[in-house]
Image 1 (cartoon, rainbow, N blue to C red):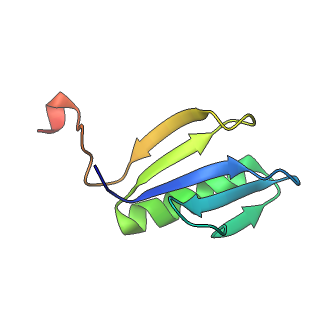
Image 2 (image 1 turned 90 degrees about the horizontal axis):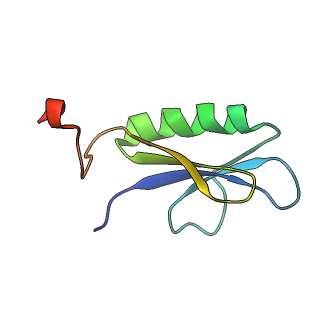
Image 3 (image 1 turned 60 degrees about the vertical axis):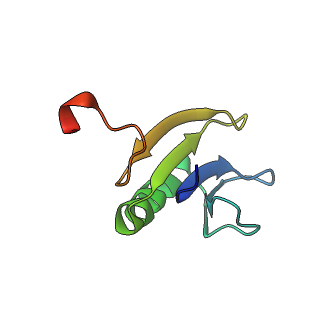
Amino acid sequence: MSYNQHHVVPNKEGGWNVKKAGAKRATAHTKTKQEAVDIARKISENQHSELLIHDKKGKIQRRDSHGNDPFPPRDKN
């Protein structure tokens, strides 16, 4: 299954990165997680992609779909 994803991930040198799946470089770097989430959400909504928010250890904490959801809620079919 292949579709666009954007991730909010911790930067090992501090702060948080917004990265597109498969990208080597970050799209954005912020001091706080909330700033990164806000930027990533705008990008994800604009590109109708899935947003994955990670915790400090890198584990996926939350997923939000902004279009083309492979598993839409039953009430949205």
